[in-house]
Image 1: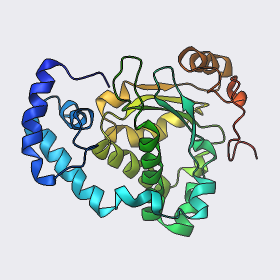
Image 2: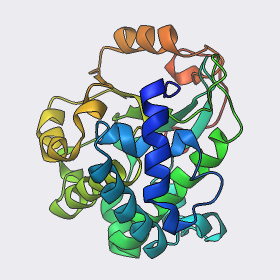
Image 3: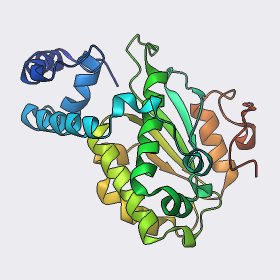
Length: 253
């Protein structure tokens, strides 16, 4: 996110007073973190306060701050992987999510939706930690990250009602609790039926987030050129035309 404007700095002072009863820690009380809620609600402090209060309630319910101490079930690690590839030219993390190879149906059967979602939030917490103490080229704290969502292998059979419901809940909860976190979402290898899946999720995607989504089909040359245009070559995996030799779970199978 860009640094706060003079007007936003004024709003931050008032907003901080409104939520002082939370006794927020240094990180959550920082200008850039509080600014998320203000921008997400377009400077409407009443709405921003309500959003933050709902988030703090959710944060306690899922024990978000302690999730890194939680032992993630093996099924979630192996079947729903997300990998930090590196950082873009502005120090923002670049994440690979091989969604097309995810076996959400099996994970739901073996551990249930609540545990699957917790694994998702633990990944977000890991990414948060990766962003801490990093600055953009303009000297502003890093607050956003990029995602490459590879849909290679996605089949209509994976779109069960339970899987779509969990994915929709995940998107809805992410938008409610992690505003302004998305820098770019690049979808690659989208199959012909992807618009039907996306239609189920789109109602929960904030307008700002939707504007950051780039969707590419099976034209490898097209999306490879786009990836190389926005990310350093050493961050992009070799399988996507870069020089990063990182091993990618599921894609290696």
